[in-house]
Length: 190
Image (tube, rainbow, N blue to C red; front, side, top):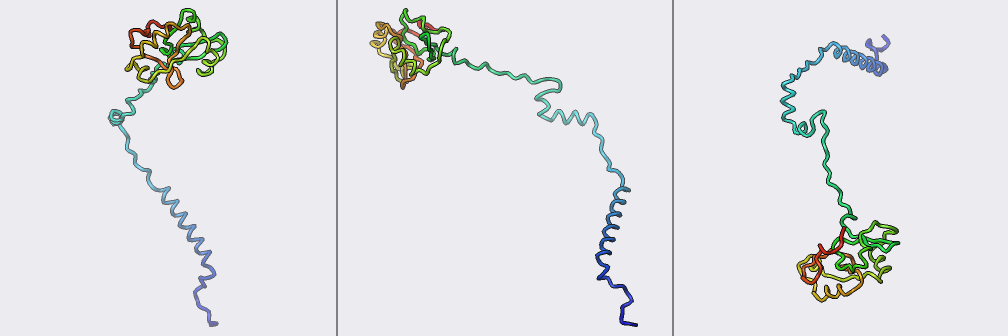
């Protein structure tokens, strides 16, 4: 004997042995899963489906074959809720009820079809100071909880200018409560 062990050396053959063992295990797992029986499926009966649908709140929202009708409120028109003032070239909008006095000669400048350029209130007022005047009111006067002094109302009637109620330099609707002031129903609106 030359000093060699009768068993083969495993150190040099170890990687090959592991590769063959992995291949054998993989093949064995594929064969075993292919030979396994198919899973058993429970068949759902129509009565069970109907019972589940009765309990589902989403099924009540829209039934198949039916379209849900969307009800939308009409969007309010800013022009319908406003009084149009125009000078023939330019125009502006003020809230209905903001014009507190209209002389007969100026009624033609109210609520006509807008022609020309839409201007912000301040620009329109600046260009048309010859026939428009603004009158500052408090918020309580605009709401109708505080009356506008009768002398203001009588002064408006003597003017040949259109009077627009403003609060902080912006036009505002006014609820006229004084007996000497014209009521909103006597004003010219669309």
